[in-house]
Length: 347
Image: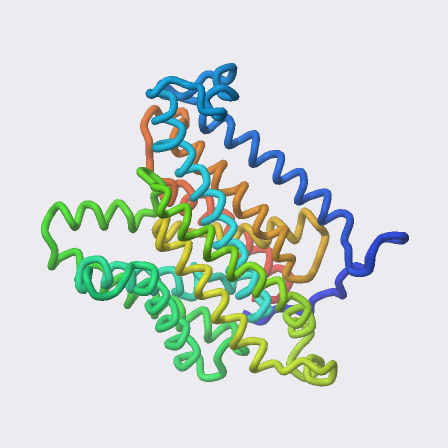
């Protein structure tokens, strides 16, 4: 799966500060508004939803105990985790698609999500009092990335080998998860199985804190690498000629991407295809060929909040884990992307 050479990124609009893409700014603002609207609907929808007219009073701390429980213990933590996890998945996907110069190079496809899930499962059920879940997910994601790098031979410079090896690594990681499930009690297995589907149900403020701190640390690191990654998309030789060290940039980006995936998987489970679709949608909306970390984060947050709203209040009359919905829709998008890239001669 050989990616075509990316087109030069559009320059800043006349009269705008250097490097500022006005279209990207407008898109991010619109996505933020859409996310807020979807968040309000999430809080007010359903039998337990807070009436829209009562919402300002409840936010000000003047609601009933029942309303405060719905907002502070049920709906708001879930909503904020969806925003944070969606942003983390999408930025991670943007990093890997940029590093591999391949629109299919997301953590889903190359097995990093499955590796992080295996690490979290091991930390939860094999060594619950030894390794914290976030650390287990990070170790699992890094182990999966290392396996892909070693197995592909040329590492992330060989997109076709990377995808093939990534599928194998993902399969082995999921096999380990199944082994863990088989060796646990029925109750623990049910809890882990629900988490592995990718679920935002029963999220707590500790989950919000985990993903928020991760984004505060890792998003600036991703933004700092944006210019280098944009140059790296031109190829290693061109990057070297422009003063960018390809191997160092690639390794730093991989560490940041794996850490973002691990943070998101820790609080939401391995929700599929947000990392694949978020950056691609962002690039199409903004018209940018570069990584576009902020636009990807905004898109990922919007996509996951919308998907979770649909999973909770869809026309089918029952709630499903959001990962089931994103897997179905993401599979359709992946098929479209494969056909599109094949027609372009890039796959």
